[in-house]
Length: 257
Image (cartoon, rainbow, N blue to C red; front, side, top):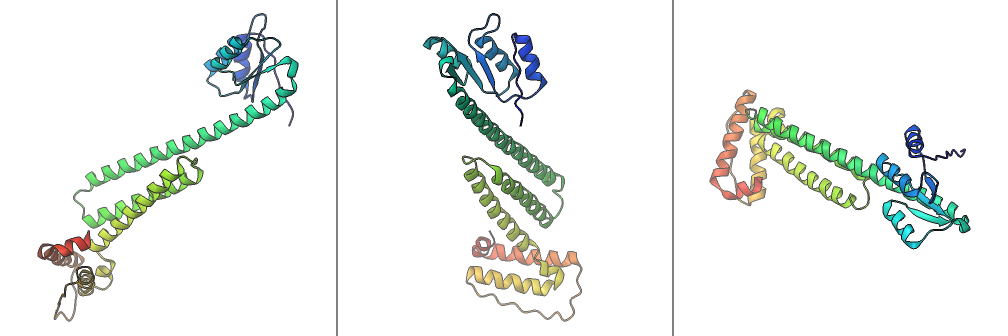
C-alpha cells in the first residue's frame, strides 16, 4: 500500500483536500505564517470528520498545548523527538478505526430498533384493521411477527458491542417466552387436531389437558358415530365448551393463562 500525502497552506486548500478523498490522519505544525494549528482544527471540526489530528511543534508552552488539545488535537509531538511521531500516528489510526467500529455497531443497533418499532407499529395497525377476524388468526399473526422480531434481535446480537449484547440477549429471551405464550394461546383457541381429526378428538384432548392442569376428574361421554360437521360448527362448539369450563372453575382459567 502506497503512502499518499498532501500539504496545504490555507483553510481553503484544507477544505478542498478533505472533500476530495478520505484521510487517515492530519499532522500539523503549530505555528505557520498564514494557517496555524488552531485554524486547521477549526476546519476539521467544521467538516464533521473523525480524523486524528497530531500537533507537531519545535516550541510550545503548556498553555498552548492544553488549548490545542481542548480544541480537538489528539496528541502533540515535539520536533526534537520525531521518533515518537510514528508511534503516535499508529496509535491514533488504530483508535480512530475502533471508534468507527463502535459507531457502525451503534448504527446497526439503531437501524434494528427502527425495524423493531416499524414491526411493532405494523402489528398494532394489523390488530386494529383485523379486529373482526377470529382470535386464532390474530394469535397466528402475532406469533409470526414475534418470530421476525426475535430473528432481528438475534441478528443484532451477533454484531452488538459488549455493553449492548446483554440487553439484546435479555430481550431475545423475553421475546421467546412471549412467543411460547402466544403459541400456547393459539393452541388453546384452535388446536390443529380440530381440523385434522375432528371435534370429538379435539374435545377429548382439551379435557385431558384441563384435567392434568387442574387435578380434577372430568367425565365425558358422546354417542356421535359419524362426525361430519362444518369447520365453523366445530370451532363454535369447541369454544362454547371451552368457555363453559372457564366459567365453571377458576382452576381451568389459571391452567389456560
